[in-house]
Length: 414
View (cartoon, rainbow, N blue to C red):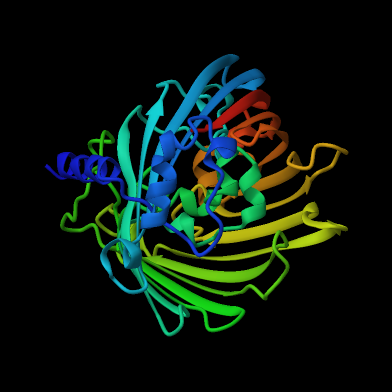
């Protein structure tokens, strides 16, 4: 019933010309999208307060050597997002809404071939399915320094996020590998959001934000469709982040943040048991740090140049396969003359095996993945992104040889 109602709401919003507008020049739909202005409909929607964004990503990937086995797959993600300024649309002062629906295509896993703990591709999911990822309302106050959001929400849209790492296809550059493994069904991150409340206060360059979400997003027994459940024993996930983002020129990056998270439900110890032979129950919590900076900006265009990021996080060493992971990377936009919109990058992620996991599995101490990629902006609405990944000690498994993954992403904005 929830799934059918959510689909009806989404279709109704699109068909009723719901759109979002910002206090800036309207986009040039004919130049920036493949499907154009829809005969003026998009511009009309924008003036009323609505933006509809349609995107498609197709990834062709192959594990050419090492890992579990050689093999190739095609993965795809189609997405529709509706942004709404409810002040313009309905007279609700300082209120916005957002709805995001996506469909996963391709039911094979590249990671079944590569065998990486951290994963290979950030649009891979456990099942081919269509579902609402996010659907929330946000109310701002105190000159927009305070905001409260409620609804279906993904924490990696605002927490533990660095914009510069978004270039890379490997999953840890979205939600970091150590936190992605937590919880009974993972935290509320792609491809599944959870019911949540988020509060953010940002009076100046400093900010503090916190979110309280359902502790088990979706349905453990059914990955298909939009599953919103609040079952007994799910508990809650709490995330708090403190950060500093000083005022910088447009296109520059400058962010530093630390975060803490904790599930209210406890998790099973990997090894230790009580006197009855039951696994000891441990606190399920962690800590993270991140920073990103523009390291060199080209004269005349601050968006072009070199930027970098670093991220590090920990989890309970008694509960999970990896007790910490860290990543760092560099990206350069406009590396070659005449290719101002292209971006090149290299990044490294290391996931460290916990002592108890090594005790159980006689595993290697860590897995490290290096990714090199180049995103070519062929048209404002079309990008092609070849990549190479080298996976050292896949899944920390001493029996697996280092793997090589090559691939290409095509991204279209309709």
